[in-house]
Length: 150
Image (cartoon, rainbow, N blue to C red; front, side):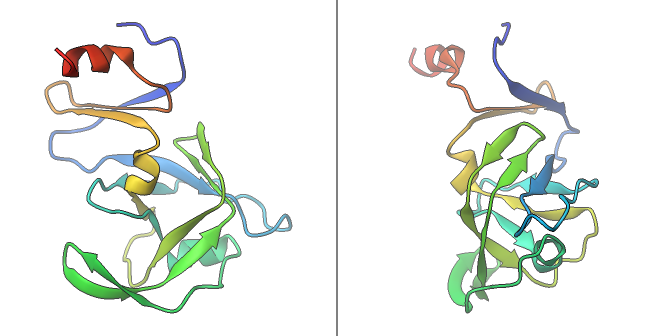
């Protein structure tokens, strides 16, 4: 199968977390885009994408909403949110202004957040453990439709 559009195909070890480079659009133009080795992880169980409080603040964000109750994998917790100006995912997929959750107490200096279904549901993605590949694209894949609709 030859893909004729933009997509990301990345390798991963079986059972490994899939990391994607992610760059927040800064809160204002005076802040230079923080293009370091920042990664988010794919979390198909998360309704909303989230970033660490520290990463948000490095990009000029600091206005967080009051905590609200949210059901997570570890139970009901209070979580704050923040409106961001946008995001560049995997160095090629731009997303406009959106609300994200704020992760507090996250202990990582390179993984700065999670990409949830609010973003993933706008894309097509395939995880193949057999081939140890992750494919992500913003295009419809007719090849997948043929397989699923047999």
